[in-house]
Image 1: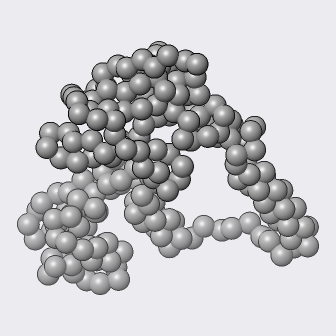
Image 2 (image 1 turned 30 degrees about the horizontal axis):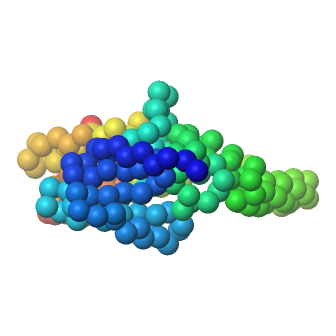
Length: 209
């Protein structure tokens, strides 16, 4: 049977063991399932209550991470087994590959099957002449540009490669992008004024630089 070893965590007053237990100065902390199989403990940090994942406390205290991998894999697939022998640092890709290899996740197989099915369908429709190349009109390009700016998965605001500076004609104030102007005035009416859908926004006229 493995001997239990305790080490300090990154949080003052708390220790964690190589067997996956966490304790304060006074007692062993009760673990709670987060609803997805991972165990957490409640910790008081700077007079505020926070939940922390047990496996991350164990890994940070006991397992070196020279490659600075962001995630931790449970080797046997049991998320409640937080012994150091069952944990290893990994990337998202490594974590997914382990889940697929051990049968913990079927998403990859489903995705591949779906892609193959869609590919065959598209090929068939193309051969039948149902599908045609898309001709991008100026309106479609503008709609795509706006969608890119509004997308949470893309660069936002002035950092976006398609961002354009705009100017308020009356005040002469220049904004690096539409979003910065919208943030100041509170809604997206400026875009409508720039696209010609309305003459003014907030009682002012706007133009691209």
